[in-house]
Image (cartoon, rainbow, N blue to C red; front, side, top):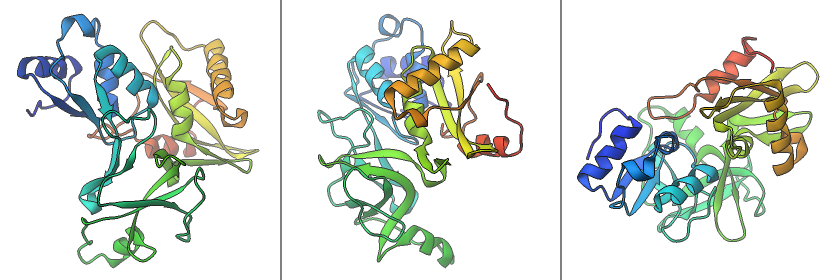
Length: 285
C-alpha cells in the first residue's frame, strides 16, 4: 500500500484499514505517529508484525516507546544506493535498542580506520562492506574511488562501533563528528541522550564555531507539547547529558526551535544547521 505524502494519522488509518503487516518509515515518522493523541485507543494496529526503519538511525528512545505503545518490534538497518541493498540489519526477536544490527547473510562488514585497517572492537571507525550486490559510477572514476576503497570495500562515510557481540552501532557521519578541545564527539550520540529527556521531542547536535575551543557541540531542540524553552531547561538538559555520557560531551549551547530542517525522505539536514552556525546566524542559549 502506497500511502502518499506522510501524515501521521493518515498512516495509522492506512494500517488499520488495509490490515498492514509491515510498515516502512523513517524514524521521524515513527516519532510523529507516537505524538498522535490516544494512539492506542483510536487506531487498531494489531495487524502489524513489525516496523522497518530507514533513512536515519533509529534512536533507542523511539524504538522503546514504539514497542511499549504498540507491542510491535521495529527493525533498523543500513544500506546504500551504491550497493543496492541493506548490508547490516537488526533481526526480529534479537533487536538491541540503539544498535543498527548485524551483517545481512552474504555480506561481510567491518570497522576500519582511514587507511583501511580494521580497528579493535568498541573503537569508532568507518564502516566498510562487501557483498554480492553493487554498481559503478558511470564515467565518474573519482566518485568510484571515493566510495570503493581498500581493495574493493564499500565505504559509506558512516562512523560505527563494532562490539564483542557482533552488533554494529551508528555513531555519526564522518562529517558529523565534532572535534572540540582535542576531543571527538559524535553529534548523534548526544542527540539520542537528549531525545530520552521527557521534555524533548527530537534534537540535532552540530559543531558551532567557538573562539576558544575551535568548535563546541550545539543542540537544536524541539520540545514536546506542554513544554517551553527556558534557561533552567537548558541547564537541565545539559546536566542530563553529563549524567548519561562523558561530561565533556554535553552541548555547550542549546537553541529551542519549532522544527528541524529535513530532506524529502525525512533526514535531518545537519549540514544546513552547520552552515547556519558557520555564517554566524545561530543564537546562543
